[in-house]
Length: 408
Image (cartoon, rainbow, N blue to C red; front, side, top):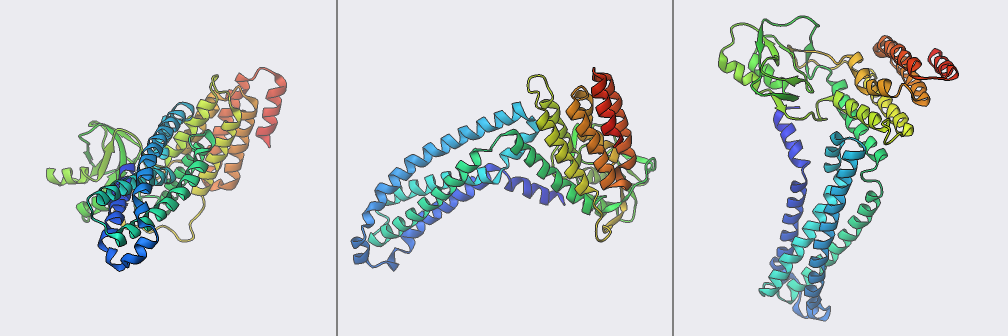
């Protein structure tokens, strides 16, 4: 995915874009009634009561303003609930929820439609035919509002809840891992550990790498080989290289290559698969706290992480295509992925027997599902988690049950 595609995707996910489009559509619909009013015979328009449009629009305008305010209040409450009860990193997924965005945009668009219609009626823009068309458009808008309200009511019953937020994080992580599975090196070639070009490329900003435009790197590199050092999710600063370059490149070329790395203050889900696992681990870790003490949520999160990692480890029907062989990119490390997802649970849930047992079963499942990818690392993580749990559990009977689960 190139930089402009990422920028366009982020813009389209913002609430104001949907609301602005719906507002524009509402204004256009209200004005089209005046443009095509000549199509309706005046006598027919008077017989069907076209003058009722003004009263209906007044009611619609006042009600839509109240509904929009109420919906924004609900959204803010859901975000606060998710931030305090689940993870602050998960709230951006709620902000980007399509059902919420469509509901708010529909209400605001209907409000704008009503306001423009009332102004046009007061200014005498509509004749009898135009008022009839406006009445028909108003009925259609009301039908859309009713359908949106029904969907919105159903959506509110789950919005901001722990289980629903976990599902969103799992879906975001699955999407990121699926993209990485199809392009494990972002279109480049694999980079061997410990090998790189001689000249470091340092950033000018401090933050997290959010996106690497490998295509731009390849266009600037030409036939030269570049080793990427900072993948999406890495925290970089002017003393940590983004990439390693061959000798002989001009300073202007360094600036252009530096622009291929998008650096921000926060990690994002798009090109950073590990971030989804980290957020899942944070949710499980918070559920283990004394204030929450919800082992069921922890076990559910372990299942989510297992599904994500199992999906990533599935082999492709065809090997991924190497579009830019001169750009060498490091691969994801299985040990890092397991530590991201299960490290917090292994450390802070060692004293909870059901969590410790489920963790051992999770490692065994990953080793069985993808032995080539996870067998060694899962065995090492399982042994470490077993050691921690045996020290945290007090009763010999609990330790015996845990060892039995670990053995098989």
